[in-house]
Image (cartoon, rainbow, N blue to C red; front, side, top):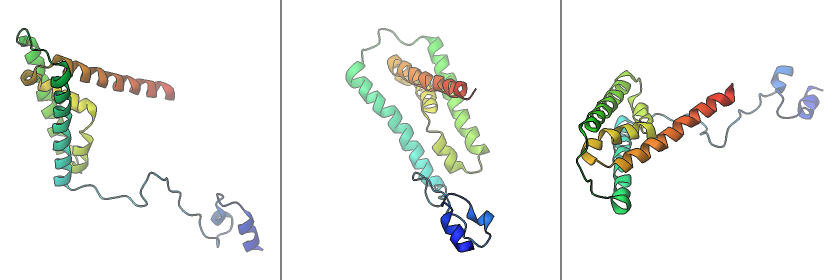
Amino acid sequence: FQQHLSTSIPNHWHTSIIFPSAPPPPPRQDHNMPASPSLPPTLLSALARFLSHQLLSILIPLIIHETFFYTPPSSPPPSSSLSISDFFLAYYLLLISSRILASRVPSITLLELNWLCNNCLLVCGLQRYLYRPLLTQSLAVSVGIDQILWYADVASYA
């Protein structure tokens, strides 16, 4: 009788609660998630990914800018823009060092530092040496759009 009932109940019901001898349902797996959690990457692997991402995220936009949009500057950058650039570079270095030192798993923290907002801080910090206002402005706009979407997410939960 118990076998007949457990086979007639749909699969998604927890038959093991109703009938203790019935096998538990198989664990639900999303098709995007691995079957078991993977180990964090090694520190060397994460550092290589971090450095290559930072380098490419500066070089590729810079090459595109130089190829299509570059016009020679008519005057050197103002000193106020150089101070702001120094502030962004110092803030970026403080952000990276504090997050890595405070992390239990620095390899994952290195990978988390590859967000666009962090790259924007780096490029704005390098503005003293690059002096490409269009490149910096385009990154600031793209980060601004991304950050505004966070407010849309928060508003949708309210």
